[in-house]
Length: 135
Image (tube, helix red, strand yellow):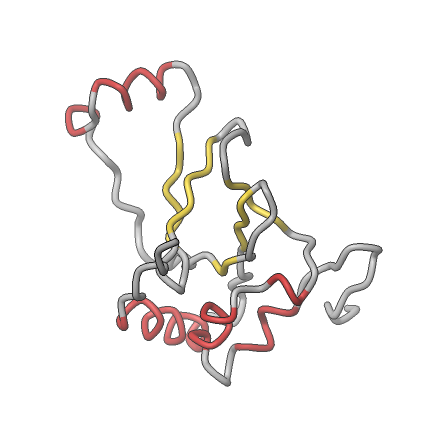
């Protein structure tokens, strides 16, 4: 078994800066379908326009999957793990909202930094428990 790749130092630093600047960003989480650690997805900056991929830059396989509606999304995480999520919610990984705190990837948690680490626990838990503040 190989260790996950080392995270880019700038990825964690950029994420912490984004979370400090935009307190309205909710963290997203991804997990392998066959039980595994829950990883924190690197959030997109809503103040920047997403870079669009040109059709001509896609491989023939990617063009075919797009036409079939099965296009996938490559999801980078804070710790350096990369998940592949298909739009029809099939595949080896899935976005999750509800999970046990013990399943959270320790490296993702640590890379959030002390000022943002509590946000990783603001989610529903199995059985209906939640740390999300009532508004």
